[in-house]
Length: 284
Image (cartoon, rainbow, N blue to C red):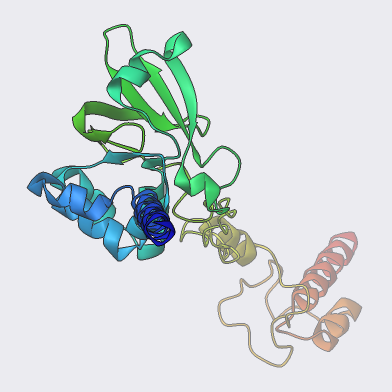
């Protein structure tokens, strides 16, 4: 009798242990996002990206999660990003709480700020890892980055799957990419170097003498230039007015003879001497 009771007690303990292990195993893997999305071919690209960036493993370790899924068309833009940026952008589509359409409809004030897996990674700065949710007057529900100036462009299309209160998968119309998530902010533009001077602006050469200057130079006597040669004959110079060579020569004729025949001074002296000679002849 006692042995029977002991065996019964031992069997109950074993059954409880098995149930506890099964419960723990079940809670440890409440869902598998890869398998869940694998049932929908429209999300195959998004599902592959979650696997490649290893975000699927992080999602599966969570107990309560909301995934904002992108169909193949919307996921194409994320696929073209560098792998490290892909992970950040995809992590923005994982909300660290359970939200189905009914719960979003019930949010007071029709708007809320939600925490994402990107925020919990420690790589987000400021409000980069948060989402803004808003229910508009027309009934549409949209998500966008909580960074100042970010657009609210990701509309909820439909609910894909839900397992209250573990996981909810909602399709959104566009990828949510926070400003600056791709890297450093663009550097401030440097001042442009001054352009080289144009042909018109280059220094003009010093102007040469004009035609007027040439004419003035020709008319003005040279400062240091030599005068007519004293020894050279006067080619066409006019003869001084006075008596012919047959007249008697006086003192003036001697002065005129001493003066250079070809120079201007000689002609003046010759003229003066002849004038004196003529006056003497009149007196006599």
